[in-house]
Amino acid sequence: MATPPKTYHVKSFGCQMNVYDGERMGELMARQGMSVADDAASADLVVLNTCHIREKATEKVYSEIGRLRRDDGTRPMIAVAGCVAQAEGAEIARRAKVDVVVGPQAYHNLPDLVSKAAKGGLALDTDMPAASKFGALPSRRRVGPSAFLTVQEGCDKFCTYCVVPYTRGAEVSRPFDAIVDEAKALVDAGAKEITLLGQNVNAWEEDGRGLDALIRALDRIEGLARIRYTTSHPNDMTQGLIDAHAQVETLMPYLHLPVQSGSDRILKAMNRSHSRDSYLRILDRVRAARPDIALSGDFIVGFPGETDQDFEDTLSLVADVGYAHAFSFKYSPRPGTPAADMDDAVEAHVADERLQRLQAAIGEGQAAFNAHSVGRRCEILLERKGRRPGQLIGKSPWLQSVHLVTDAAIGDIVTVEIESAGPNSLAGVERVRTAA
Ligand code: SF4
Image (cartoon, rainbow, N blue to C red; front, side):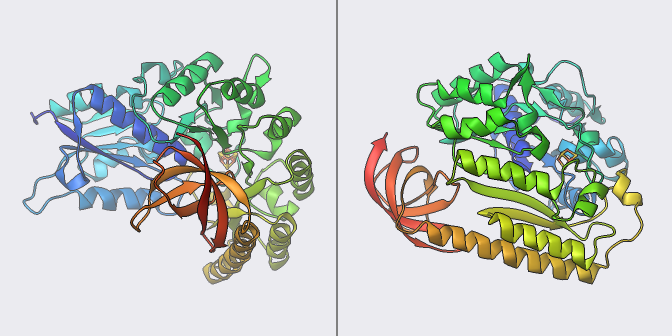
C-alpha cells in the first residue's frame, strides 16, 4: 500500500477547457487537505491533464510519464486525465506505470480514485455519466482577474479529422442558473473578466434560450467588467448572438470562429457543414454589428486531397478576412476518425511549406492589426507582472497583450494610450484609472 499523497501538481496540456478542468482538479485536491507543490519533481501526486488534438499526443503522454521517474528510482503517484485518458483507457496502464486514469467527464471522482490507488492497483474511470460532474465540484475561492467558466461540453458536429465527439461526448449545456451562480462566485473570488468555454460554446442552449441570453444575464452581475466566449462553430452563430456584440457593453469585441480551410471541396471532405461563402457572410453580419471586432480563426493545412488550388483558396480567405490572430496546424491523422482512413495524403514537405506560407500570411495580418492600434486609447485589464521593474501586462478589449509601467495593481482596469506595436504585443502609457 502506498502512502496517500499530501502534495499535488496538475500539468495541463492543450485547450483552455483543459486549463479550466486542471484548475478544478486542483481545487478538488485542495479540498482534500492536500497542498500544491511548486513543480512535478517535488509533488506526491502528479496529474497529467492530457490533450488529444495535437500530433503524437499519446506518445507525448508516455514520454511525460517517463520524465516523472526520479534519480533514486522512485516516482510520484501519477494520474492521467483528459482526452488521451478517455481515448486510451486501460491501455495507458498496460504500457506505463500509472495509478489513476480518469476521463474528462469523470474527474470529479479524482479524490476517490486517488484514495483507491493509494491502497494499491490501478483506479480507472472513463465513464460519461448522465449526471454532470459540475455539481460535485467545490465552489471557487480565489481566482485571477481573468477566469474561465465552462458552460458547454462535447460536440455533435463530427468533423472528419476530430476526436472531440468521441473523447468529450455529445453536446451538453450546463444549466443557466448554475452558470450564473458560478460566475457570481468567480467575481466574488476576484474575477473581472470571464471567458465562457465550450467545445461549441455558441451551441449552448436551455429551453430555447441561446448563448446571447446567458451573456445578457452575466452582463448584469455587478463587478463583472468583461465577458468573452470561445470556441464557436459558424453554424451556431445566431443573429441573437451577433446582436449581443452590438448591444452588450461588457461583451468584448473579439470573436474566435474557426473555419479550417478556404476551399469548399476541403470543407466538404472535413464535414464542416458550412461553406467558404456562408462563413464570410456570417463575418459580414458580425462586422456590421461591431465594426471594430477582432477576428480569429483556426486552420488545418495538408488535409487529405488538399491541392495547390485548395491551399490558395485558404490564403485568399485569410487575405479577405484580415484576421487579428489565428491558429494554424498541419493535418495529422487521429486514430478512429474518418479522415484517418482517407487516401490522397499530402506529402509532408508540401504540408510544411504550406504551413509556413499560411503562418507568414496570418503573422502579417496580426502585425497590421497591432500596428493599427497605435494611437488608440483603450481600457486594459491588468493581469500579471512584466519582466521590467514596475511593468505590468494586461489585455486590451481585442485580446492583445499590452505592456505598461504603472503603479496600478493586478486586477485594475486602466485607460491606456497605445504607443507602439510589435507582432505579438503592444506597449502603452496609462492615462486614466477607471476601477480598482
Ligand atoms: S466542431 Fe468539429 S473540430 Fe470542433 S470539436 Fe466538433 S468535431 Fe471537433
